[in-house]
Amino acid sequence: MESKRRSFLKNASILAGTALVSSPLSALAEVNKTIKSLANGHHLTVYHTGNLKGHLESNAEQLGGLREIHKLIERQEHSGLILDVGNFMGKVPAYEVISQMNRAGYHAAAIGANELSAGQEELAALLPDLSFPLVSCNYKFSNPALSAEVKTYVIIHFGRLKIGITGLAEKVQVEGLRFQDPYLSLNKVSAFLKTEKKCDFVICLSNLNAEDKSYSNIYLAGRSAYVDFIIGKNGTKVMSGAMISRNSKKEEVVLSQVGYDGIILGKTSFKWNDLKEKSGFSHQYLVAGLPLKNNEKQAGRMLHKMATANA
Image (cartoon, rainbow, N blue to C red; front, side):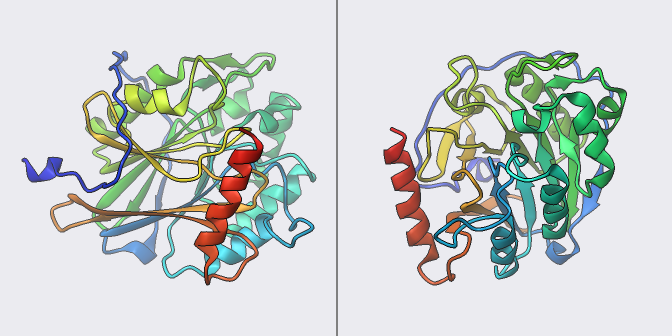
């Protein structure tokens, strides 16, 4: 029993939190997928993006953009989950962004303010074009298509392991959209995924605003109970590395974000032993559009510049 509690994350920042009590979970929509290339179930790599804002092409320095992100993922030594935390629409027509995300093989995406900027009906009209699910556990939609198709969670199977993925969204003013407390919503669905669905690992795609004093990912981690990995977005505040927090049960939660506008890709890997105990962790930021050699160092410098510029 003690071995299962063994810390596999080192050099971590530890933050304490307070537990919240959630009500029983109601019926949820579910999607099941399988990643055949990870059949041994000992290693999971998560590639993650956020605040893409419709940047398909590279910038003036030939960096970033969804097309380069796709190429960068294809050059990696491990396949894995490809996830987005929302605000992927913006600069170009939505169907072009969605088409590129489909080609890149995204497995799930959260919903951001950009996706709802034209209202529920416009987002609902795009649903047939998506080959990946949208996830949100704290939005209640009045639009029937969104209510039926946006998933509270999805489950990815690989080997003996089950990965549960849910999403959170920030409060926006959209007619007919009901915002629910993200802390309570996440605790409810993550408890369901761990205890009822027997997921071995739970990921939250969080579109919460880092500058919001009411709800933030750091407090979200501290008040959670069953989430293993929180992936957030960067606004004007930029994290230059992953953070390790403690949840309400004093267990480790990984937090990561990436730079905005599709310049930097997050790459986070976890390992398990034969007993399904977490045995390893690694985290990288990579710049889309640069060669793999020294890429991580360049990403670190770029994130530092972003953080300094927006301090």
